[in-house]
Length: 603
Image (cartoon, helix red, strand yellow):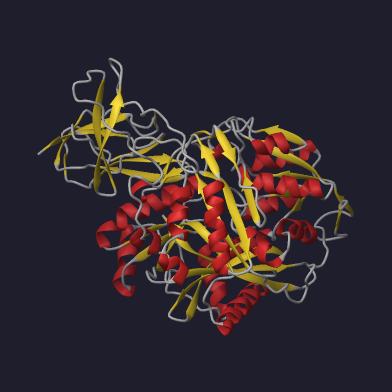
């Protein structure tokens, strides 16, 4: 389609967008790079040491290495990314989602360097990206919201005081990011200290800022969001809505558009409120206003000042390319639909395919090599991925492999087509969320639209046969093998292992190919303690908290360690009452799946 012209003033010097640096990785970086190629715009990728051979690097016209593996050393380093853009001759930067996408300092640093930031202004990001300030703006714009704090919180006493006033559960949420990162639910005062500490740690790791705030948590609500777009000429529109209620750990698993079962007047009211909010801060670019919907009423949740992970379902029902629209707006042009978006046609569903083991509903991060990745080839099906066969899902970043997006003329057809596409999607080498997505779409509650944000974790069963399968036990007299116990979701599983002399942990059972469900492995330990009292890491990751010492007396279910993997914190709990001994790790240690952490001698 040729080069996209840059606006004459306000967002850069006159000319044309000729080269864009993509300040991200994985699926979204690939998505942006491909759209840039379609528009004749050169692309520059950045990458960490772990991503040196990643797909987004292979597809880009140029790449710049940002040494190190931790995100703070590369994808969260503003100075290095801006320098990379300047050194490469890029005239614009696209932040994607996550990392620095909602960082006002980053947006300002890009524009201060004379480059175009493909997103809203730093001022708009600061107001709306900082969730506490966004609540104040929403109130001024007449957008209803649940009770929450208007200032950041720093102590567990503040959490307990808020819960005493407004009731439990209470949500502790990151002030400078979204996507479920840095969020914890507090069911009662005893959980305040641990939840606050965990939310602050996770927020700091994911967004470079550990500030958090509080909201009353609605436990029987749906999560519905509105896509908005605005240009620099005063035009702002809402482009349909999406339902994102199917979540685990406050992170979305299945999304769809339009949101099913909403009255037309409520849908319109939510869209109009989103536009008011955007205009109140002089917003320019793509954004998403998220709501909780309960008992026919909606409440402002937050505004994401970036392109959303689930934007493809909106593209599918509207026939639009939202990344191309971002380029158009960044270049100073008017919206392609400046007064109202196109009417939605049909229904679209997106399933996030993550390298996670859903056994027992735990969704344990499971990095590793992808031996085979084969997307379904059928009409109305799209698979956006940051990987190909032979690539490896690294433990340093998020677990997303790709997004399966399926369109149908109506919701029922879209559900059936998605189930068929999930059957055809092959990911071998790592456990994935494919079985979980199948369980969701095949569930009667999903068909009947009776789900809420708590539904997946409370109503959907993920037995041992889903995602990973324990192999049959070897004969007891086989002195080269043995059996190990793990606890998943409160259930006990006996799993065989074959270990040589001196092995510290049971080896994985032999893999058998399974379409769509990844390599069959032993189930990941939930509480983390086997029948012998050994406590092992349920995954590869980094120990970020050691909560016990030798000689401590603990109770069943008590958190002993916290292991961080793929930007998610995973508590390792004791399976029984007992006394701790042989603590063998410290904070900062990198451990493999099954690595010994300690022993709990049963009481």
